[in-house]
Image 1 (tube, helix red, strand yellow):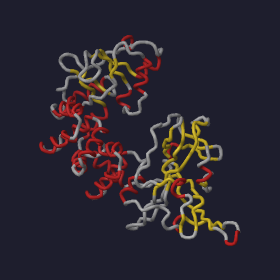
Image 2 (cartoon, one colour; image 1 turned 120 degrees about the horizontal axis):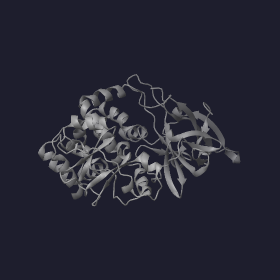
Image 3 (cartoon, one colour; image 1 turned 180 degrees about the vertical axis):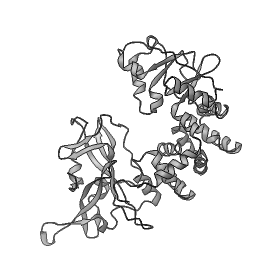
Length: 423
């Protein structure tokens, strides 16, 4: 159906299909964002679809447009098997086509349907709003009259969100590294406006992709309630790195915005010297006891909140199962978990791995990861209790130095921002 118009009213009646083509839900609405106006020699871009609202397992969920492999008369088929079942929450700058655009009155006419044009930029597929079908009631009992117009001709098709709300909505499906490139290209006041338009989780992800000094400039403008929400979504080691760039007064103000348990963890991380395993490690790893089963371990590994470098192994310890733990016993790698029966206990599968002290310098940490082909190495105290783990991505960040993010973001910011929009 490449190049053919697809009508929104038709899409909203289609089933949602898994990767094999079996129905798992039904499309209820489409989520659109405004295009960019022409500016500084850059052409205007069309409004586009960022995702679909679907009902599945009695839930109303969001399906990112990039997750759709095929959209035709049979339904909307997913690229992969996993589905995010978190409830759909509309964000500022987004418009629901069925709920907000169709049946909207524009002068003497009414929007009766929206024509979508499939587009692709080689990296991802999507749909732009290309046409609008307008209807006008006929006089003296005659049938309604319809006409099809370009979306650019329909003034007021979208409500007018603030510029940064619209930008945040347009960036919804972009990798945080790409969004960070956009943020770095903005003046400070627009950075704060864009941050205000993001939800807590999205802002936390973007902050983690920015150099610490630029993170500081953004969080300084957040109120206490917003800080609590954003810090709650960030990794503890990233929060500690951020606070390490602040003055003592600023740091205490930020720590005061955390709950007591999180504050204790971050203060412990801040107590370690920069450039050591303690300063690099994260205390949030998968920890289970020796009598936990393979099935329990795999359930933890499947949690999408874990980053890849953490989800590749389970750290087996004596209780308590929160850092600092009881005695560290070893790890069980995910590949081993996939080969063993679900009821087998982890104590039968534990592998010995090298451990490092919190005072170990970053160069030695990198050597341990490289020598044993590990994605994460455990950090233990003198009593053999697990304090956390240093992941390979954090070591690479440290070894590359602070300037690499700036160079990398400059490269990204030179690329088109709106995919498939011809910018």
